[in-house]
Length: 291
Image 1 (cartoon, rainbow, N blue to C red):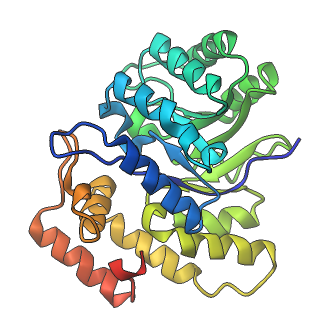
Image 2: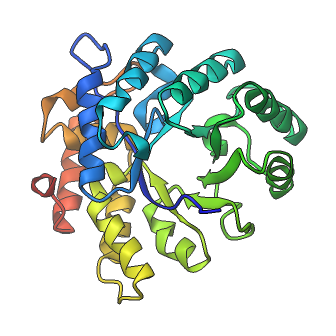
């Protein structure tokens, strides 16, 4: 079985001035990222404001994905607490020929490993053609996957549970399975994780660092000397000083004003923070002209 691997951006969503989802521009941005270094992108991850986008708009964009020549390189995030809505979204996506999904357990409620296993069992029983990358991010969901939970899910659903995005970082250096892909959620951990046998990264900042991250990935696999990893990590550190979604939209808005539009309760960086962001990036010789 071939593992999914590579550099994936948690792609930004683009909105019109009336805050409706701009399907065409969102799709164009995803294509841009793939054309500029990403092996693929996640549509409607947390960076894409998935929890804030209406289900009807998600379905509209999903039905437009086949317009892209890259659509087989897309992973769709559910970003939904409702089990029924998640299953519906997955089945709609499967119907257009996309089979990879990034799925986080529901937020807000407290639960245990056995409840997580039951949750994914319900999804897979209704959509058994799906291939799921678990989304491990305790900061967002309130739950952190244990190795025991992953082992049980992989044992019960070997064809459907195919990997994890580990943004809580309690898995990537402790668990290995020949048929299970592990992605880290930050460029800072990319090279270390590759050395440990992991498969790549799914990150927010790959919206702007895709070419650098791809070079680190390729140089590792070609056993070349790493020349840009420090810069890649330093750029990530700058963005992490701020709310990542706000910082990325503030940065990209210098290239295209449509990125100024975010869904409430999110907003652009305050002007003082925006100024600091660009000053720090300039010190790293990293500016908007490279996009």
